[in-house]
Image 1 (cartoon, rainbow, N blue to C red):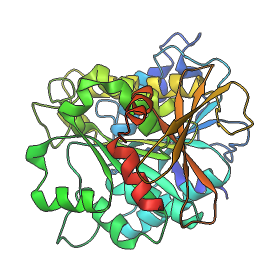
Image 2 (tube, rainbow, N blue to C red):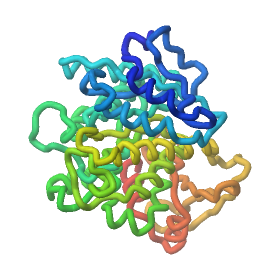
Image 3 (cartoon, rainbow, N blue to C red):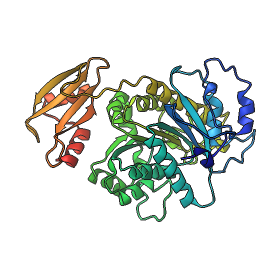
Image 4 (cartoon, rainbow, N blue to C red):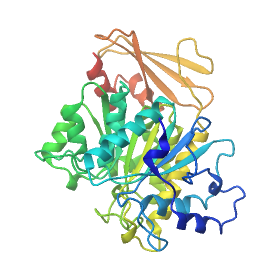
Length: 385
């Protein structure tokens, strides 16, 4: 696939601004698409893809969403000297939304086939559907996590928009989506029908207040996630004003960065999308700067991946057997002696595979010893037995 035909080079005005920064040790040293030669991604671990809904027409005083983030991202010091990152520029868009969706799907499908981890910048959550179709095209079975104040089911609405993409994914799902998780939803933005549908499908939700009680419990959830769709509207307005759907309540900037780092740490995650930045609404570039730091934390987490996969023969793992009275006679837990992270092995009842290993926490293990299975694990069991 010749990638150069799908991308506009990084904004020339941004390149001029970049040249003013000290390059030593900063992310400004990331190779970028200058539009002068065919693009090659063979040697890179992370690929940055921008989505500019205005087709790159912005100038020096009004950077589009991806370039507004790049402006600050490239000023940050590189957390991973040996990590190879390439920025392909912004996807060329047209007036035909269907064509845009199909082209982004093709690009992502190719990048996933090349085993690259993709960072999507700009655009809105409509593009979550494009990414889903890319996984579907590759015959993958995935878990999606949305960091969002809403569910975006769009019940009884037509077409595909950023407000109903999840509903369309559910409608068209042919086995690609195994699980969906929402982190940070706010109850007053969610209707009763939406809430009931999500739980009828055994999907997972973490209300903002629940999430805030123990943010570390999100790490196992994100460890099993393949694709994260992060809507900046999940962040409170005072921390991120440049969003169309502003709210006084939401994630703090520090919490958004912590979640992003968990995403980067996940060995299973190969697409991290940061959507919803509206630069024209920004105040002193506050949101763009925060978005850049969120991406920095993802990269820092990625650099610390351990590629841990527990099995019965794995080294560096301790095995714990818990007698259980519900669903199974025993539950087998694994603990990494390197990172202290936990996993749970669940036997299949109706599938051809013998067992399934899912991420969990030490709290989950303690609850199991008291014959109490956490809600998230119970929902997964309901899907496989």
